Amino acid sequence: MSEFVFERLSDEYGPEQVTYVYEPRVGLKGIVVVDNSASGPAIGGIRMAPDVTTTEVFRLARAMTWKNALAQIPHGGGKSAILADPSAPNKQALIRSFARAIANIKTYIPGPDMGTDETCMAWVRDEIGRSVGLSRVLGGIPLDQIGATGWGCAVAAEVACEFSGIKMEGAKITIQGFGNVGQHAARYLVKKGAVVVGVSDVDGALVNPEGLDIEELISHRRKHNNVTGYGKGKVLDRDAIIRVPCDLFVPAARPDVITEHNVALLQCKIVLQGANIPATALAERMMHAAGILSVPDFVCNAGGVICAAVEYAGGSQRQAFDQITEKISDNTREVLKLAAEHKQMPREAAVALAKQRVAEAMSYRRLG
Ligand code: NAD
Image (tube, rainbow, N blue to C red; front, side, top):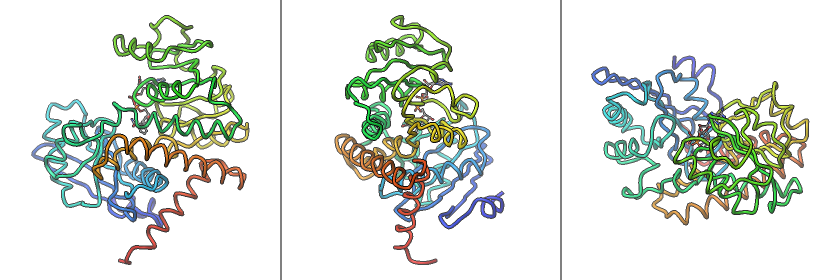
């Protein structure tokens, strides 16, 4: 397996280290990939799912390398996985055992990801003294609660609107996925003057061209776990959100929701990728050809990891918001400017910029 990773996936940036951990007494099987730590110890989440592969962990780690480098935080990219059901009754034993097994991989700082949360991060810190995504009592900044990623998306939206000649005041927004990222992106965009005309969640889509009352909708969802029962709007099929006319569409749910089969349905000028890889590579090229400005995931959804880096450095919530604002605003502007100058897709410009930053960080390291 490791041969496969190094022969097929390695390049001049990494991975630096791929480690398998195994503890049969608790049934622990885990994978850690430190992709690149030139800028500092890698930050990346622990994914807990029974079917994660080494290749998947490597790809996620590489995505963190680009995201962290672009955000210019003092951390490289990494990721890990525990191959188990996140509802396993011995979850705490698995997490603690995993933490002890990675204690000596000092170039990796674990954070939360699918299947792990701040409680898991507290167990990890209790075992090895390092993790991010902690609760306030442990000095953490609860990034989902404060909406760090949603705030970053709203900041990126403002810059993207500027590039597309759209006024934020009155800009029409649709959002797919009304979870941590979607809800907070909606709240912050409304605070900036935008109007959310449609949202979707697993149960369906809700559309109101006059604008939805987001605070009311959030409290409705908190109570009823749906958006469609809110009432003040038209209920559509879940996937119909993609064809609702708007200025800016925020996919904030799952990967690969925009494909070559549905990209032509989009009726927006900007796609702001709140979720990770919400569009296939082909769909992204098709959006570009159709004149839709697509802001890449790792540019606009870096708010969470910037917040985690501030937490790790002992900073405050206010400092986290300030850094997210400055970094995401500057990076979105630089990426969109470079893309326009070089007639590239924003993703190509963003990857080139991230590579340049990683290469510079690597140039300062001693060889071997
Ligand atoms: P979440 O689980 O809180 O919310 C996701 C929401 O999407 C849920 O409400 C779910 O019901 C809904 N959903 C699922 N499938 C859907 C579909 N087909 N159509 C419409 N809605 C659907 O997750 P989150 O933390 O908001 O993360 C959303 C995405 O953003 C994920 O891809 C995640 O990897 C990415 N992301 C999250 C963060 C973060 O800080 N939370 C940071 C970077 C990237």
